[in-house]
Image (cartoon, rainbow, N blue to C red; front, side, top):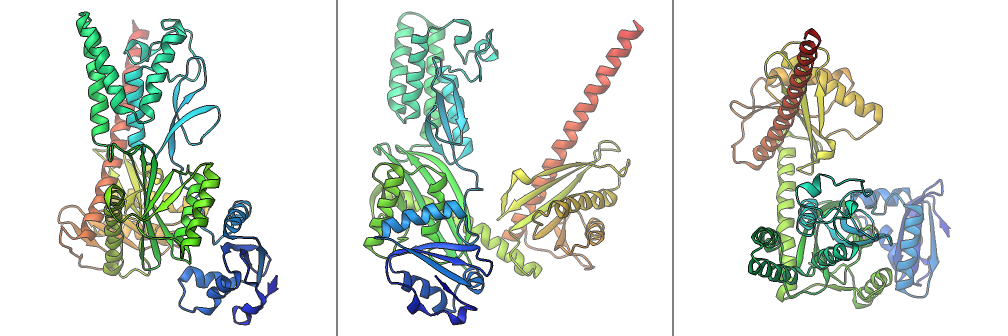
Length: 542
C-alpha cells in the first residue's frame, strides 16, 4: 500500500504491473473505489496522468490518500475478487444498482396444487420464469395464464370456492372440484406456455376445441377459442424471432456529455419482454462497471448483445465471458453483432435509446431557456383541484429525466382554507411538500412547475422563501400556454410544438389529471358517507 498527501505526489513506480484489484481510500481510510486491472500500474496511473477526466473521476482522484492492491494470477480472478469486494464494501464511487428495482419473475410454487405469483427473486422454493423487464407485459402474461389455465392465486387454500372459481378462472382445488392429477395437467400446460412454447400451447388448445365441438360441447369450445385468441393477441405483438431457442439480453450504451445512457431489453426464446432505461455519471470503464453491477441484481442470459465493445482486447472479452459464465453456471457469450437478427435486436434497442436522448435534449433546452445552473433532471409539478367550494385538493407529480416517477407522486387535502382560493392553496401545498423533504433530508427538485399564472407563481415563491429555499420556479398558464417566471412582468412564449413546451404540458396535464382523480375520489367517499348516514337516520326514525 502507498500513502499520498495529494494526487500530485503519486508515483506509479510503486505500483506493481501484475493483474489484480486496486483499492482507493480517503484520508479516513474509508474505501472510495475498487477496480480490477490486467496491469495494475498502468490502470492506476491513468487516473493521475490524465487531467481531462470526467467530473466524477476528478472528484474521486482529489480524495485519494491511500492506494492498496491485491495481486492475483489472471484477469478472471481479478474480476471475481473485485465483484466480491464491491459487494462487501459498496464503495461510494462504484456503480451501485442494488437500489434499483430488480426485474420481476412469474413463478409457480412447489406445492400439490401450485399457485402462480410474482417474485423479485429466484428461489429454490419456486419455479421461476422471466425475468420481465416491463411490468405491464408481465402483468398481462400472468393474467392470461390465470385466465387460460385456471391456476389458483390464493396464498392458502380457502375452505370454500372464491370469486375466481365463480367467474371461471380457477378450478377450485380448495373444494375438491379438481383432482391433483387434473390440476397437474393445468400446471404443465401453463409451464410449457411460460417457457415460451406459445405455438405448441395454441395447437394443443385448438385440438381440444375441435374435440369439444365434435362432441357438441359448444360452451367449452367457445371458451377454448377465447383462450387461443388471448394467446394470439398477446404474443403477436411480442414475438421478435421465433427461431431463437435461448435467452438473450440486449444492452446499448451512448455517452452524452458527462452522462452515459443505457437501454436494456430482455428477449426470452424470441419473445421481447420490454425495456429498462438507466442514466449514469461518466467515469472510466463505466459500461463494464454497469454490466457487472446489473448482473449482480438480475439473472444472466446465455447471450448478451451489445452495440459496441466494453472491453479493450480479446483477452479482456474472454475474461468477462468466463466471469459471467461462472456466475451463471453455464456458458455466456458477449457479442457485438454485425448482421442478421441479432443486429436487428440491437438496432431496436438503439431506437429506444434515441427516445431517451430526445428527452434528455428537451431537458438541456429547458436548462438553456430558463438559464438554470444545471440540467433539471428532477421536476415537480403542482395542480389545485377545486370543483366548487368543497373538496379542495392538490396533486403533485414528479418527473425524473423527463419520465413520470409515479412512486413520488403526492396528493394533498387542503387544510388551512375552506373556500376556493388557489393562491392560498398553492402556498399551503408547496410549504408542506418542501418542509417534509427538508425534515427527511430528501432530494429536492431541480425545478418546480405550478399550473397557473403570475399569482400562483408568486404564492409558491412566498412558500419557498419561508422555508429558506431558492428553487427554480415557473408557472404554466393553460389559456395561452404561457410560461411565468418570478419577478418577470411579461410571460414567455414558446411554440406549442417545441420539445420544451411538449414536456412542460405533459407534466402539467399529468398533475391536473392526478389531482382531479383525487378530487373525484373524495367526492365519492363523501357521497357514500352521506348515504349511509341518511340510511341510519331513516332506520332509526322507522
